[in-house]
Image (cartoon, rainbow, N blue to C red; front, top):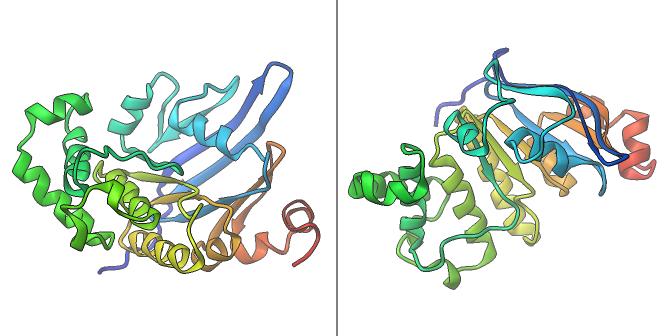
Length: 256
C-alpha cells in the first residue's frame, strides 16, 4: 500500500472552543489543527472533557464560544448528518451493528448511506450489488474478509470493533474520528486493531484517535493532544508532549 505523507493542509480546525453546562466549564478555550494525512492521539484522564470536545466536533454539542471548521468551512450551522456528508465519520466506542443483517450488509448499508441524505433511503435508491462489492473490499481491508456472511451476534468484540471502522470508512471520510476503539479488547486484540489504524493512516486517512490505551497510542501516534479538566495541556510531537511536566503530573501522576 502506498504511504501518504502528512501535508500542511488543514482538515480539522478547532478554534477557541468553550463549552459550559450551567455553571460548569466542560471545555475551555481549546484550539487544535489536524492536517491532511495526520494521525493524532487525543488523551487525558477521566473527566478531561474528551467526550465533550468530540461531541462538539461531530455537532452533538454546540459550543458557547469558538468554532469548528472542516477543510476551512465553518460547521456552526451543519447538523450531524450534514457533517457526515461533508466528510466526517465517527467509529463509536460502543458498537451497535444491525444484528439482523450480515457483516457484509451492515457495511453495504453504510456505503449506500454515503450517497443519500438518509440511511433508510439508501436501502432503496442505491445499486445493492455495487455497494456489496465495495463492502467486501472494505471488510477485506479491515481483516474481516472471512466473515462477510456472518451475523454480528456470532462474532467476538474484536471483530465488531473492526466492523465499526469499516462502516465509518464506507462514508469515504476526509476525517475519521475514533472514539476509544481499543476499549474492552485484550492486549493482542488491541495491538492488532491499533496496527489497522496505523495502516489506514499510512494509506492517507486523516485520523483523530481518542483512546485510554496509552501504550498503543504512543506506539502508533506521532502527534498527541492532551487535555485535563477541559483545559488543553499540550499539543505536538508525541515524545515532546510526554516530557511536558504538566502532562506527566495530570495524566501519569508525575511518573514516566
